[in-house]
Image (cartoon, rainbow, N blue to C red):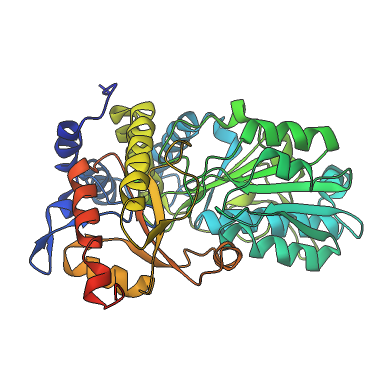
Length: 428
């Protein structure tokens, strides 16, 4: 049963499901605050994946023997579970090598459609000179570079919603950029730097008003808050398994049924074909056409287990807990001398992360100092160089929480940060 509230006691109880969180580093108890980069695995996920590998492992959709039938059944049951978790139908999600891969599948498919692939069905996705692709200045590189490449391949113009001095943006900022020539609007549901929660419904409404499609980077939202892609109304979305306590090497591409039908496959080979001759090939219907080659079956099974586990914890409770932790981090970090938090202040809801700058100390040095205290955070540009450049900095340090994070973890972070500038002589 899910809990309606995650208290510190509940978070400590849940932490026992994750063996690695009991580890020590440098002789200190691990304080893991790098969930924005990757989450840890619960025994529920590890046990399910191991059980599958030990008892039912076989290639799916390819054999008539008993193991093949059992593995295929588990594989498609997992698709049903994951689809329900994100508010989608099973035939609207396709397995990819990661969220980055999923976003590339969309951009490469649009590029193929723009070259005439996919026939009349793909015409609505075609881009060319005079068309516009709109992203934001706050995007992760995975939702920026593929669109740059698509613009180069099609002659379309890449535009972006500018970030303000806090690194965030508003729906009014987006309205000032989007025009009747806009054909695609791609954006992150939750920023991995500022924790900003995007106004998805308003952006979808804006896109609809000009006939543009929407592509949602949901990597920092699906693991951390209730998400219903049907209710949000986006055309495509991508998220990754490893950020939501699932296995590595797996991403999910969501596409509204009619949009997936319009999208030509970016990769071709076995399993996704219908008829192959020496002259030509026809492809299966979605989602199979996007699943060329041998699939990551154990990882899919593990992700379904992760979804069930997260449902047991309660996604609404996770979101409430993290928003409270996000506000707490902003408030307490901002009170430290020489520490500046990127993003809006604590009064504005954000996901449970905070990226910050320590005056006079590089983020890598900050991260290593914290690591010596057993505190794991992320230092660098977080795959968001343009946003950091907009803010006039090369890098920042990011602390990111999850449902196993407690107020004591934040206390440890703040206490250690209080010593950083003195240690490096930056307080003189």
